[in-house]
Length: 130
Image (cartoon, rainbow, N blue to C red; front, side):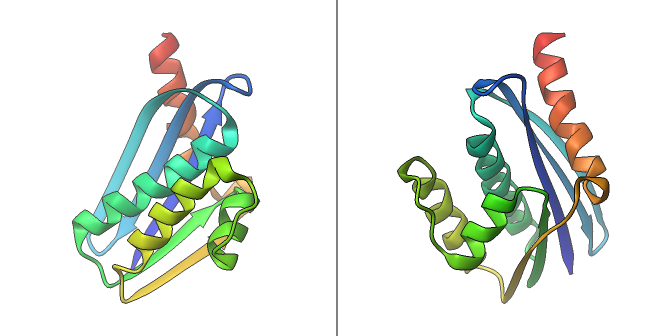
């Protein structure tokens, strides 16, 4: 099983934003810190989800478990629905990617269990401003 921890950070809302991905399992230990430009925190969180699934897909696992501290991202994936039109393209892309795995799970975790991805997301903003 591949575990994909995702997080995003924005310095302002909207503001400079970054995503962090921490992927482990099946012999992998991958850390990705990426600046994504100026956006709001929710878009950044959905961007982190899509990027996390894209990275997982490259590794070819059959079972993927995503962990996120974003309640809107987790609820949207579970319900396969989002009210805000701005989020729909991200949700559609994430749902499409999720179907490429034999089994896909997404779970909300508290911030305290997502520190690695959070640090990577913050690092992305720091590197841009730094």
